[in-house]
Amino acid sequence: MKASIDFNVYAADGTQLIVPGLVHRAQIPAAPAAARRWALARGGAGMVSHLDVTLEGRHSPSVVIRQIRATVSSRQRPLSGTLLTIPGAEGSADSVNLAFDLGEAVPVARRAGPGAGPHEPYFAGRYITLGPGEQVVLKVEVWPGANLCTWRLDLDVVAGSASQTISLPGDGQSFRTTPERPNYQAEYEFQPIDQAWVTTGD
Image (tube, rainbow, N blue to C red; front, side, top):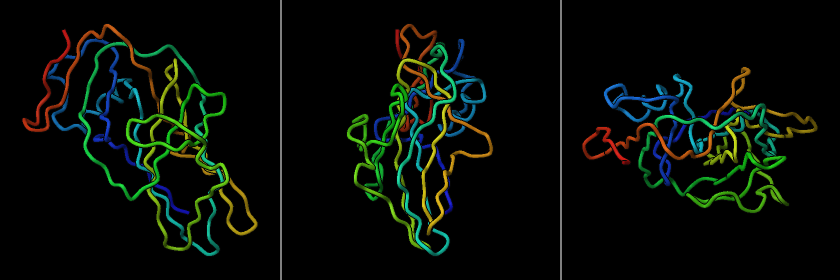
């Protein structure tokens, strides 16, 4: 099975990132995708992580995905500093919507829709099966709970009689997600019409 991950900076309910410390508007890259990479490189994190996970069956027999978990490797104090907001846009309806709550003891995949948050477990009596060449796109929302969480996605899969766990993003890397904090040092929002960042907040 082949897996690829893209951050959805235009998630339906918007994207918000916290960057440690005071950021001046002129420092922020103009394009939202570049701004997200810049924020993460400065130690920032999203308040809700929005991922597009594309899975593709590559070989026969079919691959069965039995469960997806968000495995938390560390919990720290939430980030504070500067808030960056990217407004949302309508996404594709031809996808599987999943959500994870990192505040749970075992954060398993739950059914979700844009802005809805986690609900009932997605894999309760249900599997995802991929034949050779078949694809599925998972629209994933990850909520942080009360802490700055470092985490990965673990997929329990079966191909023929062989079971394995596939970790994303792989190569020992991980994601980070932080909860909302009041009293930001600065707040900026991207305006799609003007293709520019504007100052918001008080």
